[in-house]
Image (cartoon, rainbow, N blue to C red):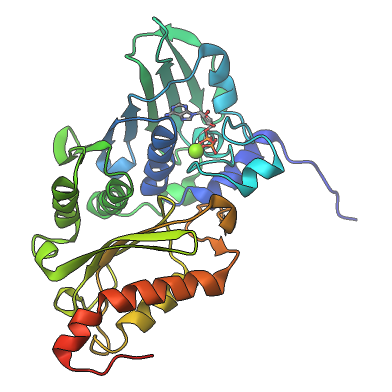
Length: 342
Ligand code: ADP
Ligand code: MG
């Protein structure tokens, strides 16, 4: 007879970690998204040995009070939603209340924070799921999370970490995509003590375009069109690359839905259709696009890592995207003397 057992919480967290924490860049994603949710204007990411040894994310956000520190690392504990209705309208990056618990179960973890208006800071350490008492600490207003020796207690996972430069490249890509998601925020990345990237806050359109150029290449601005189009309660803005900015790989595509980078079938299809008659077969367009719509119109609770979304009105979204992009590319089409598609 099989014996059915309730799993202990540590093991539950480790299993949850398996869903969200694939590699160091997944940890960076969760931590930086938390900093963004906390209203940070500056976020520093320090990495050692591709993240295998250390991942540290520091922010100047709202902070966490000493009584809340243990809750922050408890599973299914979040300050972002409290009801089913909240989930339907969620506008924050996080809402599952799982990330810190997961990370803390597979690493040596420390959370240090000072509330914005408080004069003292506190620190909580968790060693592979074992929580230590909260202690006073030194820290400016905001939060630091340190994740050391990722997967030290999950050898099967640790073994799958790739070369330092591969993991770092994943982190760098992630930071690029986050920097485009929140252009008002300053991001810094350093590796083994060496500064690697500095994305300064972009207060206006030219500086925003400079950030886009840093991610998509110096040539991109001159080979793209700015678009800003609203209809049916949706807004699409950003930069669409002209055919000359197209690539052999689909690695220059940034599509944000309410500030969240997504890979979505409906979006991909609309984009492909809009570019169909201006791109050669096998070429992929480059773009940075921001779709804003009522959070109630999009379900972000589809995948633990939240890369996928589900639009409630797929057809409407598809047609809006197609029309906006198709229209933007009309100029190109005229240049190519290809008759417009109706
Ligand atoms: P979620 O983001 O889904 O709520 P997390 O496990 O990532 O879950 O974080 C748990 C809670 O800890 C958050 O809801 C938030 O209240 C708090 N928290 C985490 N990181 C930060 C941060 N950098 N600044 C302020 N609060 C934070
Ligand atoms: Mg989170």
